[in-house]
Image (cartoon, rainbow, N blue to C red; front, side):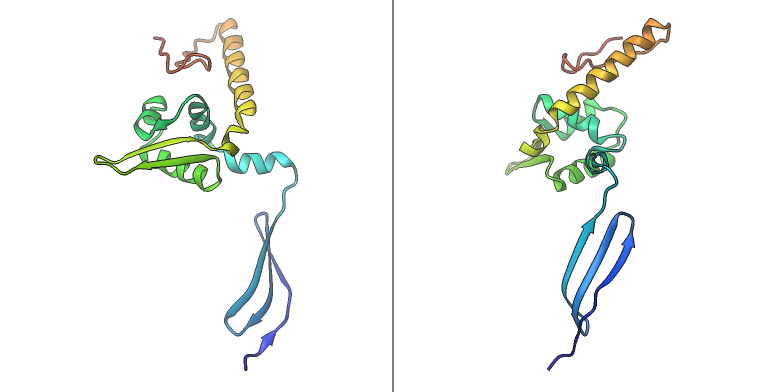
Length: 157
């Protein structure tokens, strides 16, 4: 017969509160995680925040893309970082990864239904950024914009 120890213990780490209850020796019977946010935008930024995720998502809004196409569209990102960010977006249910059974391997990425729900936000972010660039240009700042949101992969030199 095993000995049950009933207790509730909370450990606060980052935004998580870990609640553990009903432990039998070394076996954890039940663990629940409670995530705490101060404001809803924290949950959004947890998924699309960072330097690269929103840029990747903006490119995927227009079309399904392969890794190489994303690398060409975002030349400053390293292959390692692109792969990491795509995996995180896939893990969060924002991006779908489709692997074709062929040689050489072919992998395509597209927005999931959940990812497509971000389109309105992403459209507004792109338009806002383009307006800021236009305003700064009007004030004499020299800025090159390689891709306008409404023109896919257009380069201007």
